[in-house]
Image (cartoon, rainbow over all chains, first blue to last red; front, side, top):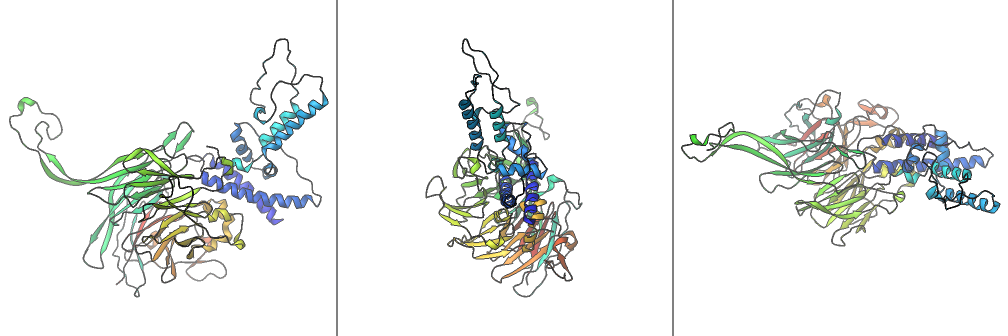
Length: 179
Length: 455
């Protein structure tokens, strides 16, 4: 249990260091970022495995909290790391092992379900999938209508939630800035 | 502003023992350190007559040795300011919206070929070749110009004379002869001049480039460890150096604690190493911070080219170039810090990059630590000593007393406990004169020069 507490503390410290390094003179240092991410990964693994052993004894997991996604996609994971409270940070850290593909599966599943349910409302012409999963703050593109068609409300609710989740996933790999 | 004290420096000790005495200290006395004055690199030239320092403000200061009683074995030498110049200025990368620091990361001297001296200095992105030359004569007696430089009325000139060179006060000029820019996406950590005296390498986190000293508009990329997908990045290059004699051989160290030796004759791109030096990790020492403390912060070949030394956070290792699977010698610099890694992570000290250096005959190695302590390891006599660079120990003729850190238990008199160490006082940069037992040790903003005198 002490290791668990230690892991959480180290994770919190690491996240704040990562956030602070963004404002450092000279820009992000790749070496330092890499070392921070390695420590975070170790701490996350320890925390994850101790959480699993907790859950197997009946403890419930804390609810996920929405992350702040108010910047460009590449920066999002780092901004979400800026949350100083260890709880939401650690919850998002749990999602780290998930590949971005999970979010895709989520979207695809929703799409598949919609098709199966044969909704009477005409389907949106927007392409689904990760590539077009736009966050709320960006203007959504409207599909070009063909002659005779009318615009219907797009049933995007579930897909968008899926997209939102994918963007809030803390992937430790993305800690390394893509130059 | 430089203040310094000099001292008579001989002291005797039992035969063969080194006794280090204070010689000089350069830099401001006050405790309020201006960030620009923080020393970031120290390097003797090939004869040891010149000592260069670089600082965070982009400035280079060169000291020159002046020797009294040169013919006597117990000579007294003093390093005085020879030249000061602004090497790098802060720049801004508009494309990435990033400021480029002017801090001098490394200085490397070129072997002297003529009257002038040349050195390479680098910040995070740009390497510059500087020429340092002396001027002690000036021309006088121009026909067309007055002494103050104004042009004479041609009608007043009635005779013709040859201008003569007259002595003047020595002036040392530093001029940038080459600027090697725009070749590094990541931050430059090393430069190393080749033994061929024509080429040099520069290394950043992911790539190493080979330059010709005369050519600034292109360089060859000889190592590239950037993965196709940056999310798969697992290690970075931390230091690189050319072999002192074999112009085809260089090494580079990584954040994973490995060293790769490469032969440029094998292929144009040296991604495939000729030798990989790696010591298996001791599983009993595993912790959250194992990866950080195994990252190599410096690599230096011995002068004879048979060994290389690496510095990681807690130790110095000597490697025989013919044995890849483990170092031949390992010296613990401050093992008492192993139980404090979590605190050192929180205060960022665990990221400090200590350098190391060899003495002239490769028998002793030196590296820095905290509390302004520095450590020397005598390889032959299997002895080590901890010394301190401080203003309190800077009286004339003062012999440095060995220091001891008490790791735990009862603290003896004169020992200092681990918890009392000042982690803001760190010695990251040290240099050893290539021939004599004179060392330059940089604290945060002061440069100490110590000398050993043996009868």
